[in-house]
Image: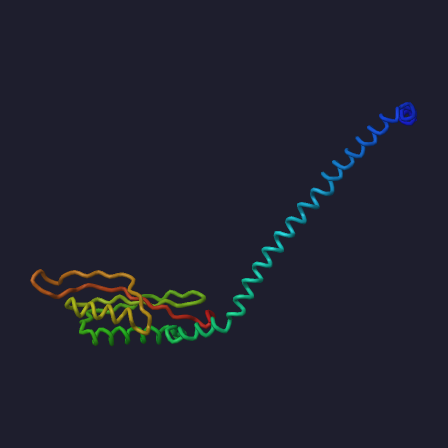
Length: 185
């Protein structure tokens, strides 16, 4: 009742100012409580939509290239042997190393199989090869190992002269091979 009494005593200009102030206050409060959070939410949704559209576009490009990717994979399948039993894999590895050493005329003094490392996608087999050879034959052996269809990797090497007067070298190579498991394909 006191507000109604004061309202009636106000001049027309004062009433317009009170109404304008109340409208401005209402607009500011509604902006802070309703419009601003809604605007932030819309901006966030638009950003998420843009990111999702970008991921979908990338996935679409990969899907369109699926056949060519599989064809490229098939070209490398000859180099990626799927595993057999560990014993057969190690036997094949030892047989290949022995064959390569004979072709390069490198004398193998000792060949030590290393324990196989197994993961979900691949198995890694390795050997340490102790040898004696002359330098040109050793280079030929290393080149044959690295260009073998078994895709060997020489992980570590140690080479020294056998004697001060001799042209023979002795040392060892640690050679590893990865074999893919079925789950990797």
